Length: 230
Figure 1: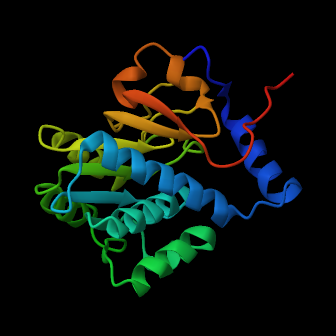
Figure 2 (figure 1 turned 90 degrees about the vertical axis):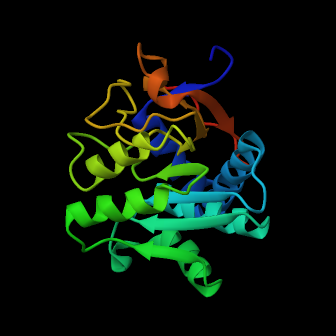
C-alpha cells in the first residue's frame, strides 16, 4: 500500500476531531459518506442481487453506525439486509443512534441482542448467518485495546465460521485487530476485504495482518485525509 497514507490510532482520532470541530463537518455526514461507500463496494465486489442476503454485525459505536448506513443503502438497492445489534438499544447514542432511528422508521430487519446471555447472542448470530451471502463487520473499531471478551469473541468466531459460504467485509478495521500493531487481540475477523476510512491504519502493514484485513480499500469520505505526524 505504498501510495496510500498510513496513520496511527491517535492520528485518526485527531483527524475526526479536526473534521468535526475545525472544518465543521457533522459526524453524521462523515458516517453517511463512509456507509454509502461501503455499501457500494459490498454490492459491486460481491455481485449482489436483489435476492441476496446480507447480515450486518453492529456494535454500539460509530462502526455500528456505519453499518446502519450500509443496511439502509443496501435496502435502497433492493438487497435484503439484516442488522444484528450486539448491544442494548439504549447503548446506541449520537450519530449511530440517528442512523438506527432511520432504519427503525423504515421498518428494517433489526435484531437487538444486547441483554441476552453470551451463549444466546452467539446462537442467534449463528442462526442468522447460515443464510447470509455477505457479512459486514461493524462490531469494533480502531479504538479497541485489550483482550476481546464475550460476547464479541464468540460472535467473531461465528462470523469466521461462515466464511465458506459468505464473503466477509470489515468496516474500517477487522474487529479484534489492533490498529497500531496489526496484532489480533483475541478472536479476530478474517475479512475478504476491509473498507477503511481516512487513511490506511498503521497495523495493516504488520506481518500477518493481511490474513485478517484481506484486500484493503481506502474510501473517500469527502474530506482531505489526515496529515502525517511530524
